[in-house]
Picture 1 (cartoon, rainbow, N blue to C red):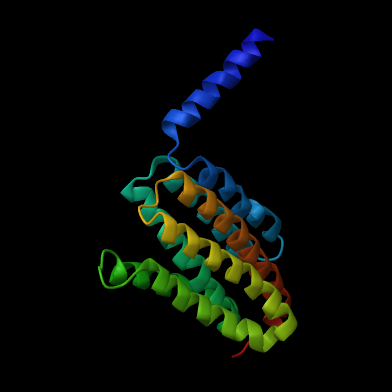
Picture 2: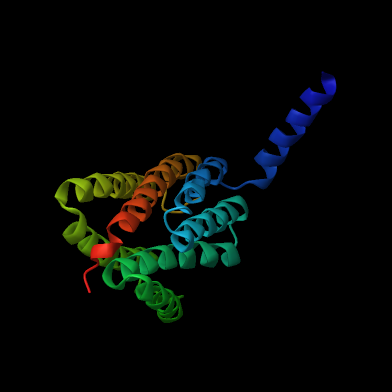
Length: 198
């Protein structure tokens, strides 16, 4: 019994010392809903899982390499989803190209926030989703992103440095809401792709 207690204490100590944003690190498990989305669309489900890994890495160690991986993974998820909804399977390839171009064009540019690029790809995604899926299902999905955006704004307002406990609490909730929103976008997009825009 003492060995188990010591083991748990060692893990707790390691997390306290080694993990920068413990709550945000753990709540990235939401993006692993991608495992359930693999059946609906293997590529989009895989991208969700990759996003979960990249975001976990960033909140765990908070270095520039993981941060770039996190941002690029978000670009790819929304760019590929948008391409898929507009053009079907051909759009997936276009989405990968657009996600890469966005990273290359805007990486390190002080006048362009990654949030602007993500919002742009998000709009490109939700417009065809709304057209193809109707307003009720679209509002259901938008609700998750609206909640995520609201919580993220609160986090940034109270703690712009993105490294304190207040930020961690609110940002972890953002992970949950956005992860659920992306999951529903993926599985609901797959069911309507036969009536894609073009």
